[in-house]
Amino acid sequence: MRAPANDDSNWVKAADQTTPNMFKQAVWRAVANAKAACAAAWRGDCLVAGEPGIDAGYLLIAKELQVAGWAASQAQDSAGRKYDHLWVRGSPATKDWNATKLFNYGNGCLITGDGAFTAHGWYTFIGDDPAPPPPTPEQPPVTPPPAGACPVAPCPDLVWPEATLPDGWSSEEIGRPRMQFNSSTYVGRWKDNTLVVKRNEPYCASIGMSPMADGQPRAACPLRPDGHADREALEAWASGGFKLESQNGATCVAHPTNPVMFELNGGNCRLCTVRTFKEGKPLCGGWF
Image (cartoon, rainbow, N blue to C red; front, side, top):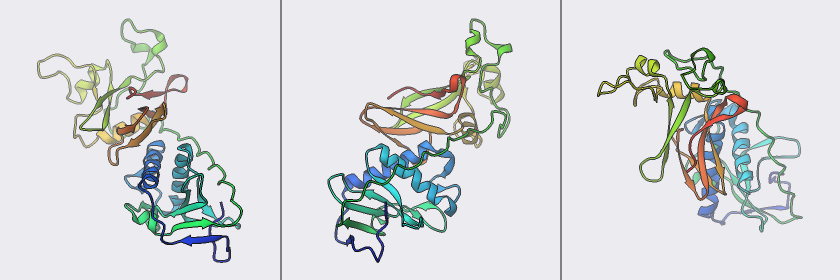
């Protein structure tokens, strides 16, 4: 996709064109999905790599827009110089493209609100209809941190060790996660997923969560109690990051500050780990 340039008379600035709410919502959904798809690249609304990561950030968001059916690409000229905004076609039936500036150069943080859509505005291509932007290259697979990289002890076993399989459990469990998601509907529209260890009372005791108040042992528990300073780091280590999966045409939107919560619009969504286990499969929560 060529960027509008001063010497290209085929591009006309449509200064007075408004940006429909549906278009804005599609862009912000793509941002949320990009965060969920590559959680390791983000810290809140900022790219971990800062300004040097902006090009990769635009590619992540463009890919999510393409998956949702929008033509989108980071703009570049014929010499390959990239521009600090994202081109998104308003709809397949028009030749109107929005130059959406999503990142602040200098810190690699998102521009929030309508400012993202007015920094450059709309352009109309009046020449021959340009071909849709080429598909964004697939991002390299996210490699989860090694299982031994425990950030703060004690840490649970991530998979069932052969020597200590509980009575009645088959050797088929070896290599499968020794954790599960407890999935539930949280306040209002949000779906919540708590990563818990299972059948591991010694671990629950080691973090003060067993025995329970009635004196009974507790064999399933979160990686740390609610509000504990180490919980987020341990969940990130055990999961390798979180990603959303969808089916039946769902739009899955990650919570802006809590990586284990999401909302959905139609269809079904679920939360999965980036880390994979036996047969290369991640650990996933229930479908909503």
